[in-house]
Image (cartoon, rainbow, N blue to C red; front, top):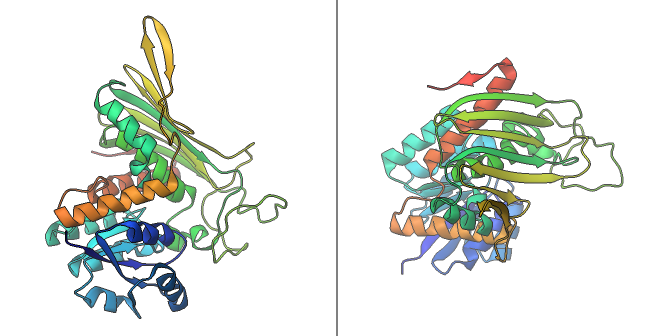
Length: 353
């Protein structure tokens, strides 16, 4: 079978998941890497036995051997890099979020359609084992019509600083970084309904809490305790055109007892919790039943999900099949994320027609 020649753009921490998954795929040639910091790209090239280290982005785009790119850079570069790669005739896997705003997202979608290129967005939780199992139950009608979902991703101390805490590069804080994942997975499992209205709030009271001692947390490579202009916490109520709704709350820092992740869905025939671990709720013989699926990964299986994501992208590139996380879904998620920020800023509900 034909092998796909891939270049990874951006060699920060998340790139390791992409690089290793590409290495594992028998139908991929990991052809190149590029990063603004050449030494970091060279280190990754050595570690993963990559053929080429490019000096600049133009070299990547102008190399006819590269058939696909994986974009693992700051959020504010996603759209520009994706469009550039599409115009250069390459398929694109872009880390979430697709862009910084809805306008950019629509431009990426238009380019993908015009040049007939595959664009997959990095909604990695769609590819987790527990998600795939639950979706099969949903597709077989076990939950009926899902009319409400609730998602939380709470960090009590977890502002990674660096570019994550710089709104110009990230676009925002926990909402666009963490919320995008839990919002997407609920929306995806609810059947991808069109958004109708959004109410939202953001709060910036605690900062990065660099004063806290004796409790460790992840810090970006460019962590700076004085750099932070993103929200601490956000919440939102999203109502969809079919009448269903989703409530979400996320935080980088909050006076909470512990970190918490929850994803819950409620339907006319049953319910489910995806996180912290998969469980189905049903009713049989006038009795409520909590059903525990017997699978290897009841919670998000990080490495396996990334491998599934990369495998799916490679398959789409080689066969032309539509991705499981297509560019259109990236556009709809940007509509939701920017809608929450807008609703919070205006302190009023945002509606879509």
